[in-house]
Amino acid sequence: MESTFNIRLFPPTAAVNGAGHLTIGGCDLVNLAAEFGTPLYIFDEATLRQKCRDYRNEFNQVYPETIVAYASKAYLNKALAVIFKEEGLWLDVVSGGELSIALAAGFPAENMYFHGNNKGLDELKLALRSGIGCIVIDNFTELERLESLAKDQGRSQAVLLRLSPGIDPHTHQKIATGNIDSKFGFAKEAWEPALKQALSSPHLALRGLHAHIGSLIFQTAPYTETIQILLTFAAEMKIKNGFNLQELNVGGGYAIQYVSISPAPPVKIYAEAISNCLKQECARLKLALPKLTIEPGRSMVGQAGVALYTVGSIKDIPGVRRYVAVDGGMADNIRPAIYGSKYEAAVANKATAPNQATVTIAGKFCESGDILINDIKLPPLATGDLIAIPDCGAYCLAMASNYNAFLKPPIVAVKDGQQRLIRRRETYEDLWRTDV
Image (cartoon, rainbow, N blue to C red; front, side, top):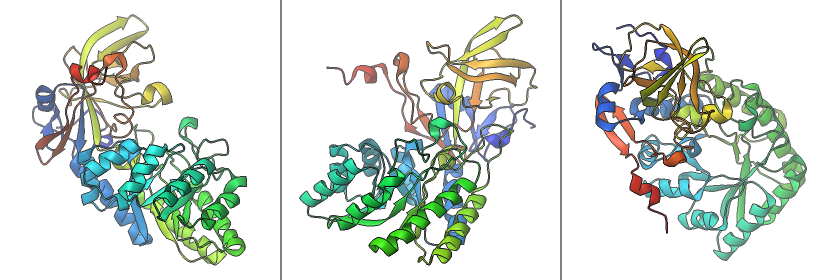
């Protein structure tokens, strides 16, 4: 049956069944809502696994020595960690919490990178005890702290230095991380002192450089500019300090398509641009080709996730706006409130009904800014209808809160017509369980 929304924004397994209902992974969203309630997050396992394979295949075809490390900050739980392990990915973690989730899922610590601009002593100790594969050093405080901890343990810890290259990634200012005025990474004047200090330590094994310049980057030029800057520095440090660049980590930030008018480049485009630049610059600067590491997060899980809500109250302001309130909002998806992020939607139980009315999808929380979608044209809506929002696999759940004592929603993984609960809904008891 023909849908009245852009089904390509949903996971590729999305379809409309004979009842006119939206399905994901062969599962009817109306049935999922009846079984698990709403708000409900649905992860399509086939889409997630295919994204893992796309990144591995596209990059390895053009640059065989590539490590694909999933950026856990986009969202991580034990079930997803198992999938990433099975698909041969590494993990990038940014906290002791993310590290603990990965370890609880049986993910090998030696296949993890540990990032962050202010890693705590306890976090670094946990990472070292776990046998973390590589720690990405962000500043001098951490450099000295890690050197002391590694010395106490009598070991040599593999590290990268995170450098801030001063690149404009042409994205939202709140998700730009590689510009000059950034809390992340060593500023340019500190690059050589940091490198010399790391090289001189018998307890740190400096194997390369790292830069992450931002998120939702639709162009390849920011990546190639970053590579040119880092390799020029590496070549200079090879001559001056005997530095051997074994690994170049260019981070993530690859874009996904949230709305119909903003298509994102395929993985192949990023892979070719990054690998070609790396090869050309290494040849120009007479550097041996290093191992390449990339860290996709949003682009790995974003399209795999769908948020499902139930319509509650409907408010008409004649000549102004019709507000349609759902049972979730900024506590499970704060991105529209803090970034102005745009989404599209479908009515899961009326997937073939014609779009007739312009409405604003509002959340249930006590903030005027709790709006999920402004002015979207949908079929006529009534209380009890189901609103499905695509591209919710990244950062929605990772940034979810208990604002207004909201119960964080459950997650169901779907595949081949089967569903499995991979996170239960919180209970009221969970809200006060840690109170003393």
